[in-house]
Amino acid sequence: MPFNSLGLDGHITKAIKEAGYTEPTPIQSAAIPEVLAGRDVIGIAQTGTGKTAAFVLPIIHHLAQRIGADTHGRGMRALVVAPTRELVVQIEENVRAYAKHLPLRMATIFGGVSERPQIDALRNGVDLVVATPGRLIDLMQQRRVNFSSLEFLVLDEADRMLDMGFLPPIRQIVRSLPQKRQTLMFSATLSREIEALTHEFQRSPKVIEIGRRANPAETVTQFVYEVGQHQKPALLLHLLADPQFDTVLVFTRTKHGADRIAKKLEGAGIKTGTIHSNRSQNQRLRALKDFKSGAVRVLVATDIAARGIDVDGISHVVNYDFPMHSEDYVHRIGRTGRAHAVGDAISFITPEDHAGLRSLERFIGRGIVRKRAERFDYGAAAPPREERERGRGQPRADVRERRKRPAGTVPGAPSRPPQRSFGRRAPGAGGGGRGRR
Image (tube, rainbow, N blue to C red; front, side, top):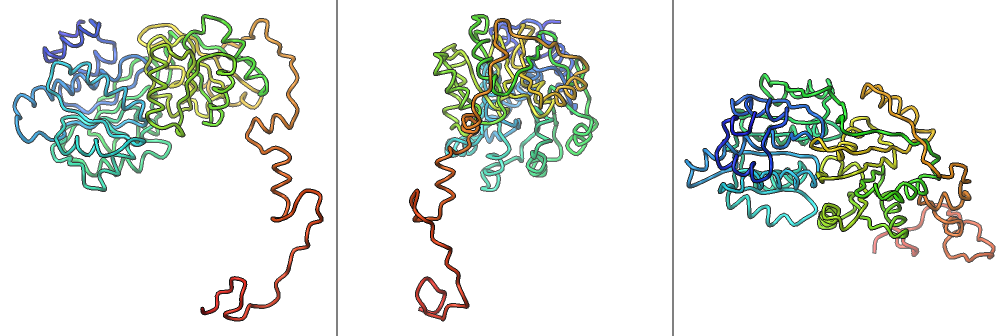
């Protein structure tokens, strides 16, 4: 079924053709007619199957009709809420590509950058806004946002939006919206518990589920490498010696871990970028741009970026640290094997990760192949304890000793016994008493 059979505006089908697409994906074929018909939709499909276009295309079709009729006083008609800045930028790129032949006005709202251009865009009038919850609520509290004309609400990566602390801000946003609206939720994973919450926001939603729920894309080959914690850096460098690892996304559990890995890779002559919450928005966007262009070969990221990286041709995803939640695993490895391309997902597993691995295999309904790296020295001894502690961010022994000494002492000097205070200071006495002055 070609795109032009879906009844989309001609300006949109022209842009789709120019982008190189001819046939809609299964989630697009199933969801677009339902959205065009005015129904609330829950769309569940594997990462990389075109979920963004499944809601963007019918919304901008609707806006195209409105834009032609409303020449004055255009207000916000559609709001898309996403969990990360990177995902907001990705959605914006999709909207601009498909609406390139339409006079659509849009704005992105997220933290880490000045709010002034965002406020100006809202004041000048926009048709569609893509936002993260935190900055959107900030502007709502400043009375900078007007939802009176809103017709569409989209929660992208809905499971993330309704879990892990996002539920209260989403409820706050939804309470501010017109009750008469169309609400769409899309995600690669959606637990039954989270799905039950969606009834707070939707009216008799049409559930569209493509493939097995929570199943990674079939085009991604998954491997597990069992390795000691101290061997992870060496194993990563060993794998990267293979030129087939040409565009590699490495996930860590912490931002400090991401920085350590990036520093080690750079020291080995491997061009590397990093994305995590301590990086400014401009730094994160620059790292993503360099990764897309091939200026850096490896991008090291925390889970904050797992749902916002849409880069063609990622050859490998490496879970340097095994994810704490099975849903995060699905989203991490979904960064490769996108749009029917192939890719490899590799996870480093330490003895402490075995319980989590068994839980993951139950979650995805399959076992993951165990593999050993050829010509890698698995018998390498662990570094001395002092070095391991320093690698985990522990202070050096001399720093620890200095912290133990009472203030004012020097190494080797006898420490003074602590002075004891007897009774209460008289009002007005010296030494910092709280008497009247």
